[in-house]
Image (cartoon, rainbow, N blue to C red):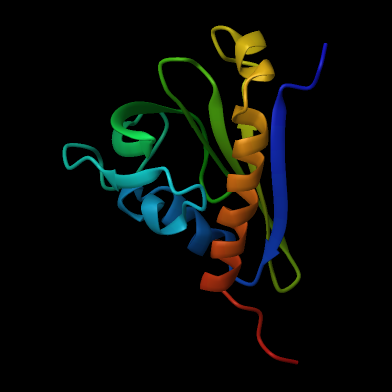
Length: 147
């Protein structure tokens, strides 16, 4: 069986706590998103995500749409992942390092209702590109100190 996920990893010059605060605040997701699809957090959601939180986002991929997500993995300052109705997950893993945090963002469709269809679509390639651009944005938000 093919690996049903794409990821990107980058070491960011800040603490896991700082990045986790950004990831668990849905209103900050449009600032972080490198794919250009995340427009805004819906106002009826939580201010801070935790396990089981449901939060809606206004999105646009061609046409505008709304999506409801549920947090399905959560470890304070180390891991957060959410999924929507189709079951695939967006996962963020944070690992402290000397001088920063190793950040891994993953699009995981192994948990999707019909993973085969996602696997043959443009989504894995497009999402991998979006992940790299998101990590670029995160790196720009926390630039490494000059030596």
